[in-house]
Length: 125
Image 1 (cartoon, helix red, strand yellow):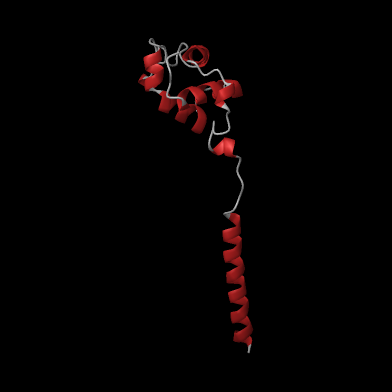
Image 2 (image 1 turned 90 degrees about the horizontal axis):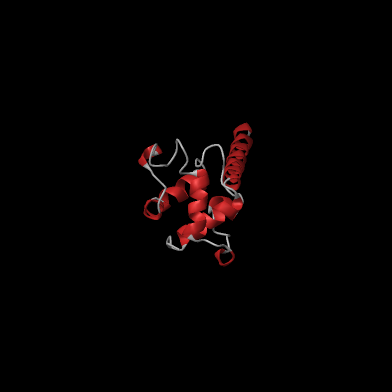
């Protein structure tokens, strides 16, 4: 008789453990954190290379970073062609990994400009 109740208890605990594990896998994240730029309305953003160049000059191609003199990681971001060639890397490092730029993170408007510029195939305008 003792083993009958012990068996039922073990089964119930096992089912409970499975439910807890499955339920802990369900959560809600904010889309803008998982998919940066996905909620940006690019029709309201001036995503020109001129705007991008201003951001890069202030946050990226500065002394000790991504200018021709220092070229951290062998990446220079001073010209349109250089920025276009590194667009995927910029997106990964600045929006996904959030490791760039170090020390002075991008503002929401800067992220919107870069996101829309990259998502519109990096126009030279």
